[in-house]
Image (cartoon, rainbow, N blue to C red; front, side, top):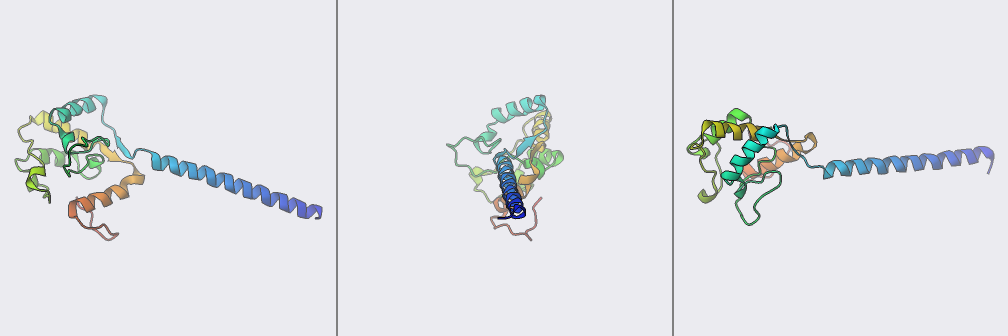
Length: 168
């Protein structure tokens, strides 16, 4: 091999090593993102504590997931609350929690024993606290398309397609 050919061969080997290292590093970054928890909230510690107490007192986790935590002994097919703030704002949530029959606001396909109960009996302050807290529950941008798909399929019972209308 001539000196020029050796130089080209060395440059090619170095290029291949650099590309391999960069691909491996990028693969690790993607895995970190995929392993990251997609649910976030910008609620203050005070709001979180106040809402958490109301959620505990009224056993919301008997039916709903929140931060991936659920009573696994229950088989209630209620939707998770993680990310609900992406789809519902505080006024909507307050109105929903204020209804004598929540199904008048959001129809459900669930059997009567699994339907959302009324929380109209709570004080305005308690309902506002819950609505304010739930409105802060978001999902990270990389997870939002998957959350919308799951929500659509849960609410309609149909498979999600790219041309499916997002339900508000």
